[in-house]
Amino acid sequence: MSLGDLFDPPPLRWGLRGDPHLWQAMRRRFADDDLPADKQALEKAVETAFEEITGARMGDGTGVVRMPEYRIGSGMSDGMVSGEWWHTSARVLLRDRWHVAADER
Image (cartoon, rainbow, N blue to C red):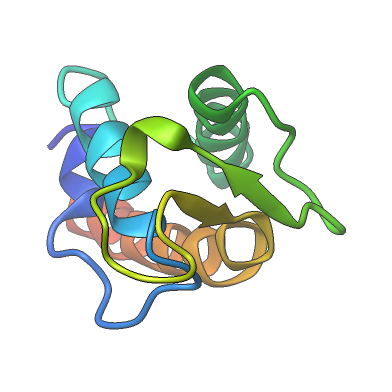
């Protein structure tokens, strides 16, 4: 199992309209990376990739990150990523999936 496998399936709910695009970018980014040995390494990898892709730090207080390349003409939050959603919901979801995958090893 790769780290990218933790991104499948995508969540049912998102913070903003750009979040699914970032989710897929992260999935591709981690497709060939081994599953991290511990949850701290998982969180560090996701935080680092978030910053590399968006140019913003993922953390408490990270607001809206504008990503013009994610604009598809789909509404008010088109092309916007929710730093808050990534810091809370996405991080918890990925951590939960990591625990399941680690237990299956």
